[in-house]
Length: 324
Image (cartoon, rainbow, N blue to C red; front, side, top):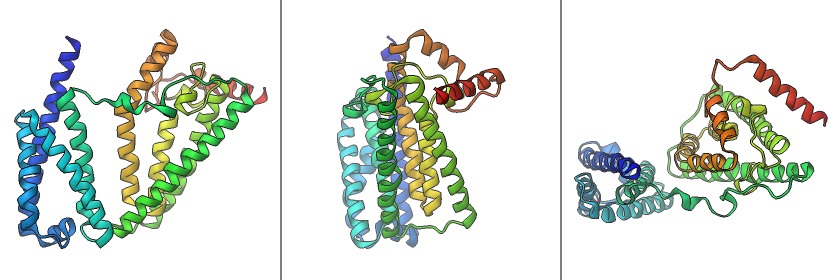
């Protein structure tokens, strides 16, 4: 009964998404016929008449049919949206035209895929993402020096990929698609300050996992003990907060609004798709201890009513660990 009761509102939300997508698509087609700059920014040199002959039935009408609860139309709307998104990315990269169209279709493809899964399955099969190094397993070693070394290696790799390589690719596409925006110098300075703060938070969180949990930030080498000290005494997800903040900071530093959007979108997807599995794993491994911890400590924003004694105790534990 609980599964059925959860399924119905999810399907309703999926239907509302596709209905809104149909309305947005119709409004866009109306807009490009009357607003020249919108047509140029989203279609470039593509022939609107030729594109509309295919896109209106396969995108607008198919999305509207899904909104009317005709589930079979999902198999038309979603694949077409994904195909168009890929095509627009290639077209914008090759021609330097229609960059805004590529971004909008990428967003529509992600939204359509998620809503389509909700429509057909009543849920998102996010458990398929929890594989390989991202599968939840406890660390096999508890030797502090080895754990710290593995933690350092993981931070270097993850920060290199998600904070250097991917933002560089996104920023180059942003330039190629003529979507760059000049950021004021104060914004760049704020990005540097945010990057410094969140990087310190990330290192502090990773060391807390190694020192107090005998584990690493990588899901396949998770802590063997529930970590409630260091930054984890204030919020349950300091590593995630640090990663989100670092991504936004990189975007501010290099003047890329697409990198900022990438960081924020990634944070939403992690919160909705991965965090429930992580918390379920923690409940299974630590039981009542985690339940009490989750009731005491907030997920994202520190509770102002938290006692000073708890904060002082966390700092004393950290000092004791460092001295040890």
